[in-house]
Image 1 (cartoon, rainbow, N blue to C red):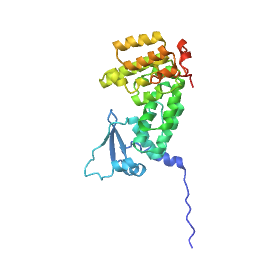
Image 2: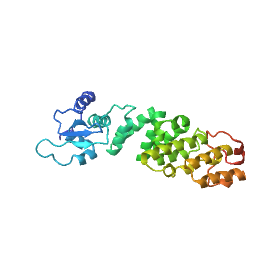
Image 3: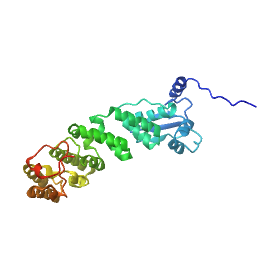
Image 4: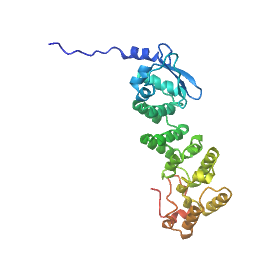
Length: 291
């Protein structure tokens, strides 16, 4: 009776190095990609991509015809991110960088590469900072990446004022901004949040070519106007007449809370204090302390 065979393993490093040398190497390449807005040409090997990734198996499923095959155009993925994906497919490893990891993460999600996605998520959470966090939050919301979403929200709660001043904040989608405005733990005063929301709406209005009030409609209800002092509310009301953003009835609800001096009188206008809410004389009537 023949004894069972034994699987033996050679050194992994030389194997990985050899395969890495084939990344974007025209030698024996049988498929070309044109990637990114820069339309960079990238060479690859059909059989390797197809056996490693179902996305590429479907994309490259048909046999190329005679002659020089046309390149496969992937215009939405930047070249640097696509090369990182190829490196992972060839070697099961990839070098990640802070400036491009979110693009690699996006590609990993879109191509169904779960292991690369998890590696990118771990890397993002390690390098997360004020400049990166809003873009990371946007990707987390777009693709339903709950752990990253929670990590980003917690980071912004702790660094609220700095985050509100970034370009990334102004480029958040309404669903992403809504997550932040619903938080009690933001370390920022409501007056600053109102200003930040107005700046966000102005940018959105310019990009979408729609009125700022229409852009802000999905999120503006989460502004806690009852926390503002009467003088601040009057100034906001005057500015709102010149540049409509907040529904008039929302401002009326905040005034109602001031007039009756009872927190339960403003159920329609959130008046729960946030972590960064500055104290004001009327807050003692709200009966809704920060939790």
